[in-house]
Image (cartoon, rainbow, N blue to C red):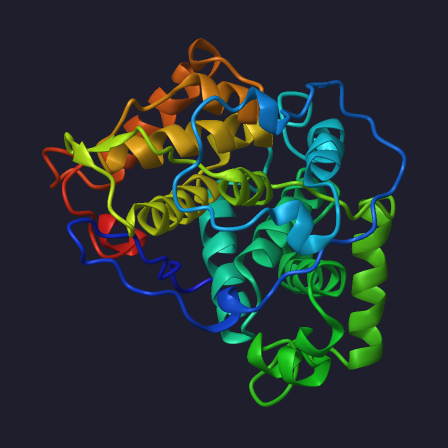
Length: 332
């Protein structure tokens, strides 16, 4: 059943970028913040006074637009991020890892067919990683539990009207309907969702790197005195940076080795990689340290990992900063 690699579209440079559409364009809402955390990382979110150069392309204040302090939300993400992803949970010997790429691609495909946000699918994959790392979870349970991870993530991340309709989802995933061997009923599927919640200890606030990247981009990831290929910035550069950041988030989610990094670290490295891919200079600057809380020396080893993997997946590109291939699936 895990049959198709994700059709994740890579960005293109030199004005060949495609506009986003569909579920990714729907407005997102912030969820209430809970109070407990097990994350050991504590970094102070930056203030606007620490930003020396003005961000380029930011036309409004996101705090005023949303009526919330996004710095507080970022601080909460930093405190919670290690609950699901990071060196404490990383297990390179997990029994499901030989099949993980197919699981990720399949879950992404189901999410696309149901018009779910990309962030929802990333959260569902984070749930899956935590659950499937348990050796007691048998292979004949994977399809049911992976599907339940998607619906649980959707119920937490999406507006109610955007959540998949269970009977239709069961037919789509071959858990029910004609040709299904499992023939799972909606009532039985609800039991599968409860099983997911139990495995997660009813903790649903997962923080993938894509969430953190969204915060960084909302504050501005390019600055007025940056250069692009040695020239002044043009209006489309912030949009190109976002497309590359989304691309790198999807690319690194497919490879389990990136799950050993804290999401905020990986997100910062993805920002660096996005700027590097577009030849935005400098690739790192003090304002980005103020934004992320990380010095360039802390992020460079992770950036090197991201960039090396990017180059390996697209070996036909002599210079990874050239126009990117159309999709991740072209690399295989």
